[in-house]
Image (cartoon, rainbow, N blue to C red; front, side, top):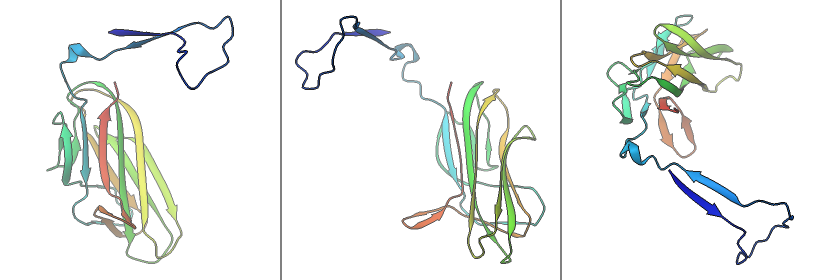
Length: 181
C-alpha cells in the first residue's frame, strides 16, 4: 500500500479559508499490487432474437449475444450466470416487451438464483401502443457455483424484443453482472 501525504499547497490558485486547528490530510491508496493484474469478474449479454411470451406463464429469458465475459462466468448457450468466486455481485437485467393485443397489461422480470426468485420488478402498463422496458437489479451475496437466470412473464401474450442499440431507438434487453467484493 502506498501512502501519500498532502500539506496545504500554497502554490494552488484555489484557496480555502484555513483555521488554525486544520490538520494535514493523509490518503492511503491500495494499488492491489499483490493481485498481479487480476480483473474483476463481469459479463454483459444482449438479447439477439425475439422470444414469444405466453400470457400468465413464467418463462426463462435468453440473452444469446455475449458482449464480454471476464472470468468465464456467463454461458450464452443457456443464458446462465454462474459465479466462480463467492462474494457480493451486482446483477441486472432488462427486457423489452411488445404485447400482441392493445390492452393494459402487467409485465414482470425476475432474478432467479438456484430456482428461487430473489428480486422482481413488476410493471403495470396502460400506455397503449407502447413497448414496456422492465428492469430488475439487485446486489446479491452469491456462492461460487450458484445458478443465476432471468425469467419474465406478462398478463397478456406478446414478444420479448431483441436488443437494439441505435440512436432514438430504445429496445433494451440485456443481462449483466459484476463482482463488487
